[in-house]
Length: 50
Image (cartoon, rainbow, N blue to C red; front, side):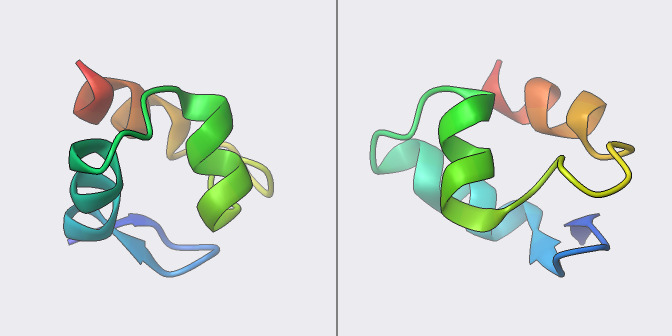
């Protein structure tokens, strides 16, 4: 499922990055560009980090 529609990033991509050590929303933003355009995905990104 797409978490960030603006950047076409899926939950599996984010979970894989988390498993590989990416542990903050800021780092996920740096890696994928998520959360910068409209910001609607930030809530879901934070939930995946927990």
